[in-house]
Structure formats: C-alpha cells, structure tokens
Length: 108
Image 1 (cartoon, rainbow, N blue to C red):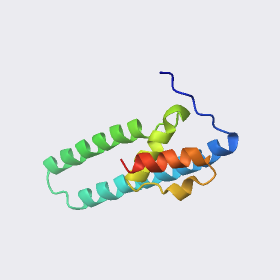
Image 2: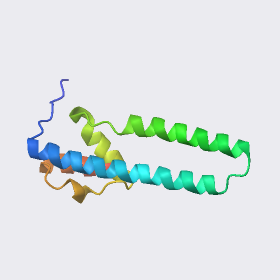
Image 3: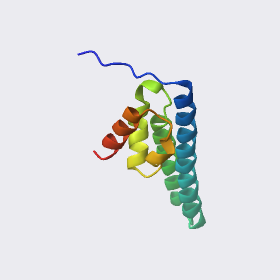
Image 4: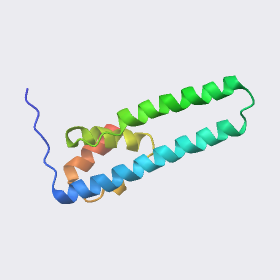
C-alpha cells in the first residue's frame, strides 16, 4: 500500500511553523521551570547530578519530538495537542482534513 504524501500550501506551512514554535516555547518553558524548582532545593552533589540527568533526558526528548519535517508533522501536532502543549484551534488555517486527522490522532 502506498501512502499519499500530504501537500502543504505556503499559508499552511506558515500556520504550522507558528504553532510549532509556540508549542516548542511552551515545552522549553516547562523544562526551565522544572529545572529552576529542582535547583532551588538542591543541597547535595547527588541532587546536582539528578538535575543534570533530568536535563539530559529532556534535551533528548525535545530534540526527538520537535521535528518540523512536513511528512510527519500531523503526528507531531497530534502528540503536542494530546500533551496540552498545543490547542487544535491554534492550527486554524490548515486544511480541514489535516485538522480532523490531528484531532482524531490526539484522542488515541
């Protein structure tokens, strides 16, 4: 079975980029807040290493999750919606079929 490649208009790509960047900023802000909270109660070198491990894991997750290649972007958006980093209405301007797919996948 051959899967069809989705076409993205220039306007859709602009909408997608803005939404993607907004979700990325939210994710990064969450990491910063968590790191600050952890650092504020740090009282041992072991806690320092725990913070380092936490940040390493978060970096790996962020770099793996935030991939703006158009071929997989619907899956990225569905995951971000599911995790509350993005709202479907922030994707207004995308084709109705794309929005429906994102909404459906975010409920899985």
